[in-house]
Length: 265
Image 1 (cartoon, rainbow, N blue to C red):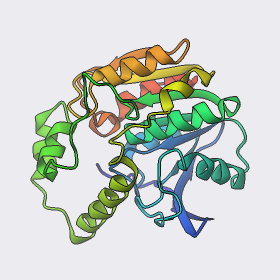
Image 2: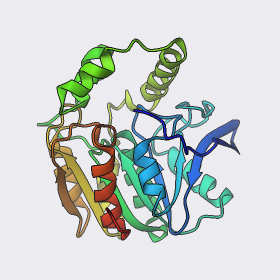
Image 3: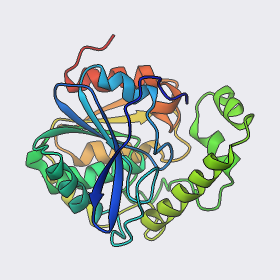
């Protein structure tokens, strides 16, 4: 995905034993956007589109992208006080929250822990739940090309991505992100056993956005989230694979903007 030429400069915020990176752009209501396991460390067209309507804050999770590892944070539930502290440092009280895949899991943990601070919640193909009959893909045993092909509905997009060898910097970043993902998601694999009991605490209007064809986190996971959160709306993004905002950034951004109360084009 091409980074917008109008990308904001990265910002370093001291946190714990190091610092995390975030991007911030736009004005109006604050929308905190939590990234998936891949794609950290860069501004992208999806974020750019959201920033036309909102004050977008897009942090890199610890160990991902340009953020320091922060080894004192060892699980997804421990990311909740991390993000509460970060938002206090940024003087953000109430906000809209959007998370995709791994970031959707983090968003659900945060929204169920501080429900009074969340105005709207969007979970895009979220991980985080144990659905026995629909396990996630075993990302730890798949090769990088297998993962890329599983991410997209349109095989031509995967072919194009695989046709360009990664630069040394990109390969190093991918390895670093994979190490961080392993720390947070391997055991228990891609879920928090305690999360289902907390989901009923979420009170914000919630959109669960599922991919039409998801080979990474099966549709049943989105269904489970929508069933557990009172009043949640479940929608299916047409002609999208798991990499929703990478495959169709404008279309997915418009769905999010419309739900959050912006004016989609």
